Length: 123
Image 1 (tube, one colour):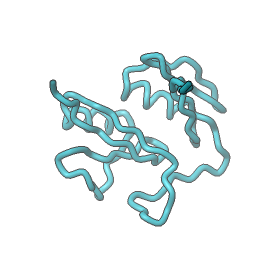
Image 2: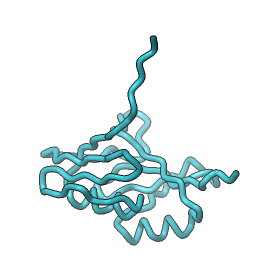
Image 3: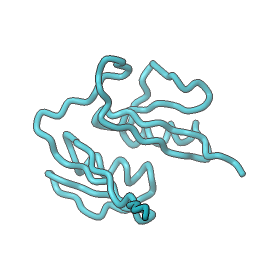
Image 4: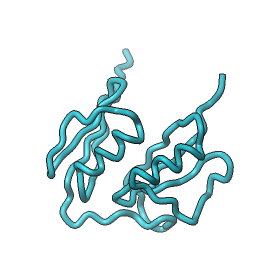
């Protein structure tokens, strides 16, 4: 018998959980279901992302092939250019190094973690 699990939540380290959750609530269109200075959470589609305060948190350098990324999320959008503008207005930044070319764009969230903005597959 094969036993599998269903992803219910991802927890991410953060220097500012409430702001981090607010940013991803905006990016994903999800609901903020918990928000305190030490821990915050967004929920959508039966999955949650939690953001936990880590004292002395430092984001990874981008790009840094010798350093370890803690995570990165890929986000599908219908209009990549419009999404990049909206996400940057919400607090993201666009680093100079862009390895995806026309396939995706790397942005950095407000605490410096990279995430990718990807065109939604058609069909």
